[in-house]
Amino acid sequence: MTDIAVTCLIPYNAEHKENRPQIEWEAIHMKRVVKAEPLNGSFNFWINGVYTKINNHNVGLFQSEINKLFAAKILADHPYPVAVVPIPNGDGVLGQNNVFRTFRIATTIVNRMGNGSICLDLLRWNVAQGKSHLKQRARRVDDHLAALRINGTTNLPVVIFDDFLTTGSQMAAAKLKLEDAGYNVVGCYTVFERLDAGAAVNPPGWKIATRSVMQIADFFADLG
Image 1 (cartoon, rainbow, N blue to C red):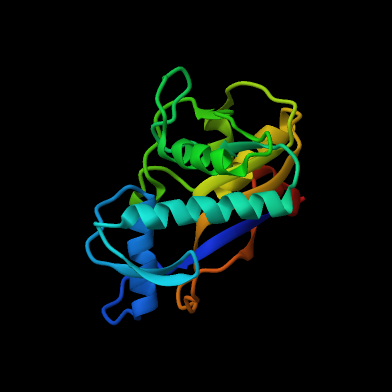
Image 2 (cartoon, helix red, strand yellow):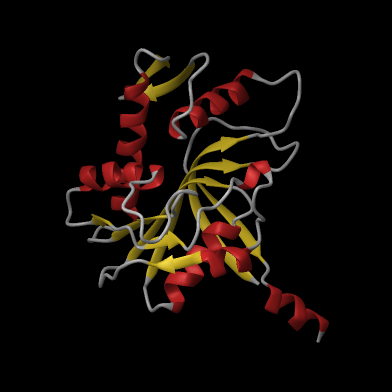
């Protein structure tokens, strides 16, 4: 069993239901912005200490604030140079010279840190990946481990960054892959945490989310 602790900022409820509280709608709108999807509506977010209404006309304020918050949080947790390694989106394939979404976000975060940290394209998929929430690929840590490849090198401690935490299998696979290759993973961060069905959605705020992810070897160990 692989246990991981992930620092998350925004809780998100993905249940399909008719009567959704406003706070849940706001998290859905925030998710659309972070995932570079069309924003159909508006939401409120604290920007420089002011409760600000965010819509298509000022969405850059929200994106900038998210980057600032993560830069400050990673600096507070790790006040030394680190390599921020984004988990690649499905199009982050080894050998392709493309810039995937989580790498763009992580780069902006690192640029705000200003302490010698770097954003490093250290993980890539061996082939293009589908979307887990559309059931185009499984959420099994062993599948992710088999598909991930190391793409570079660094002597710096590593911070893993992703935009979304669901089962934790992808984050766990990234951590295991890097640690097996000899890298010192000192932290894991995501913008959103997907909550269990029925869980209450709280306002955005830092939270340590934990996940226990089982590998195939764990299953056979239990049988023994």
